[in-house]
Image (cartoon, rainbow, N blue to C red):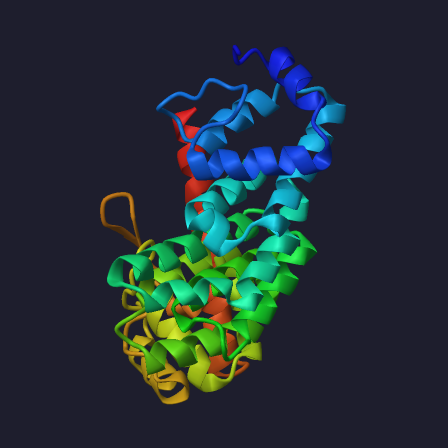
Length: 317
């Protein structure tokens, strides 16, 4: 059969829900689908997504239900991880929100744990499969269901700690203002397993998702020890730490070091081939204590960066 979308819809339209589920599961297992010509490239999920876009709205709804049902029916030993990844990707591509529930069940039931016990290669398959499933769920953020699933996994003592960074960043996408609720657990895990997490990268991604202004506005809700670690690693990729400059720099740097143990360098912005934007200390009020000073400094930097980017956009138009 040709892959004309009308022909495929007519062909699949005669299928019962059970038969459509079986068609999807068997197709991802065998890497071929009855009634459809499959190419070598792109992936099966993308080819099905491309065909799906031509379906009528009514059949698109039926097809989504088929994908969701297939995820519920998936079995590790019968269908394997490759089939699961294909179904999950397809669910993401066609925006089948209902895929979150069967994926949640698979993640919470720890069905995939048995993969780790067979070989090194199986361990790699396990990690890749979990990354895909978490990534698919995260792709539906900030939907409330994503937050519920990620919170349950993130705060579970039995879930694999190696995926804490992915869960943490996903939660930041769902509730950026609540990052102080999630950051302490990640920092505790990073301290326990320092070789596993690239802390500077994760904090930089957090800043990109949460934004610098929100980070500053909610900084006070973190305990001092977590404030210290956040500020020491904040935005080292986009905004490398640089010295505060101004008439009272030495005094204020000492105040900061005593209060949140920050080195005598912080709050600078290397952008545009190393150009530094610096805040003069006198421009920042420091009459509400060192933590409030840190918040003011961060907010000031957020404003400077936005002004700079607006200027760049204006000049390049």
